[in-house]
Image 1 (cartoon, rainbow, N blue to C red):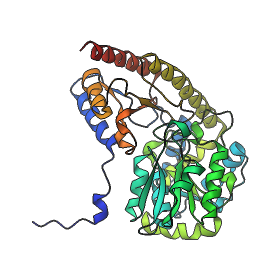
Image 2: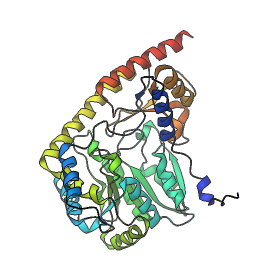
Image 3: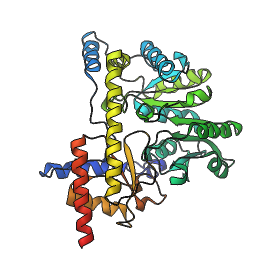
Length: 392
């Protein structure tokens, strides 16, 4: 049997190593080992009861047919109202495009904006799928090395240094995976201004914006209608498996995004859309805010606890649920270190090489999307593991 030749772009897309690592951790757990999962970026909370009840009601009411490609109007209006309530930004519902998760939104944005051969600036380290969204449409991801001096974020100065004639735009995330750090809003404004001056596009992934621990989180939508913002019901709303996200696009381009969505995936899940309406009720909003504070409490425990073990955290996270840890005091190979930690201490973390090529051997990503009980146990196990290494 002769298999068909794969498109060349397929070879440019690496496996999502986090998912591969999680498979290994689950396989180890099936042997009876009490594995603690500090690897996956998934809230341990599930969708709250109002959302579950809304899903059940939607199913009973027969909301299982196709919707419009950009989603149901009541949910688009609810998202627009939430921007006004939470961030003081007026957004027309016509600009809101509902998608199959934030991944669907980022894929759709790259389909619409990235020509073959066009370069797109991204941070290194950064969310690994972002560079693959660009590559999937035959664009060229252009990683910009970033470190603690810029809070692992892009800056206007770095953009000026790396922009070339074939660069067409930037893809940012704030707060970011894997570091949990946010762009200072003034710096974000400067980056958008520099991009606009070069007639480029700016896509800002705000999937973790609801999980910001700053006094006042601000959306990039403040900076003008030409900025494209991506968000999701996965993280703040704890609906990862529901695969529902959205993007806010320039109103003049909304028909183009709708045309592409019609052809790429027809529409997002109808049931998920109807259930998501309950996310914006007063009862659900109180639950989400309480859970945000719980994530903050976990961060405030984990960061000093890891530092007390001798692990360095060069930049304290101010959002999401990740800590980017410098383990170079103990190893020059974070991937091997993560393997040992899983096999010997049964703690699953992610090595830096999943997030780029900028000193990945120094770093581990730990997720605190787990209970305080598990976090405390994980810190104890890591401490014993490090002590045993010192004695060898």
